[in-house]
Length: 121
Image (cartoon, rainbow, N blue to C red; front, side):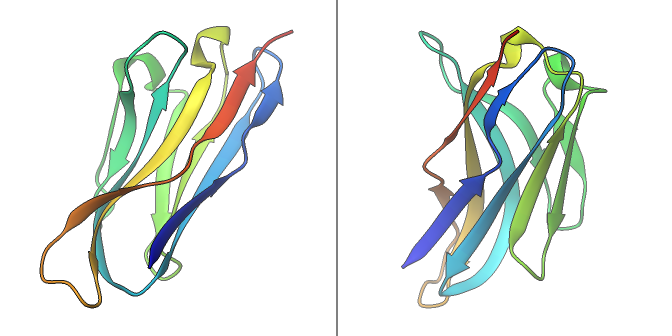
């Protein structure tokens, strides 16, 4: 059984900061890319940021310069530091990992349950 568990969401005022964490646990052989996606009400899920195992990151244009993705390969954890938050950042944020289970022979996408981020005064 493999699980991705997110934490760190909440309600903050515009201009504030939040740090999301996502820990992968279970019988994991290896994790390739990890990332964060978000889905606002009435909108499709969109990529926020992704990071390779080696640390190369890419970001959505809307968050460049404000958000920073990082990961700890020993802890199988990915982070998203979000600064200068705007009301339009309000969404449910989902963690994603391309991982291979210890009993498996291929990589597959796994998702967390989502964490709510609300930016409001």
